[in-house]
Length: 107
Image (cartoon, rainbow, N blue to C red; front, top):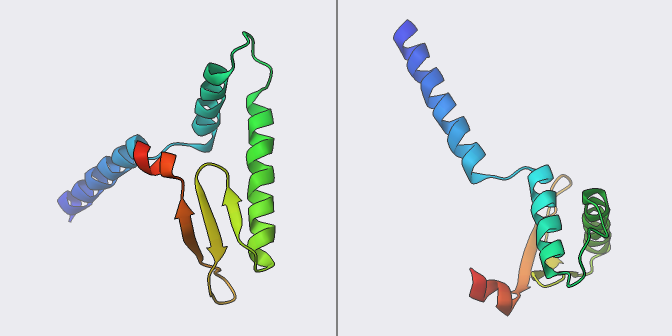
């Protein structure tokens, strides 16, 4: 019984490590976006912060959620257009209507 528990713990630890390597945290994603935006900026110097980027992402999320809630489609600029799907009381699935050609080429 003890060996089974140790084996299960080892498997869970390995899954945790794999998950951490595969998925990124929100904070790390904000930093990557900030670094990418700064590399695109032709003027030297940081003119915006990670907090600014976080507010922009929050605004995009709110606009998208409100549009889908009202039955309209939403555009995530440069990435995809989504439209509301049918769902129950707890879930509101979305359908991807189109994906940016640039994004498809990069993938």
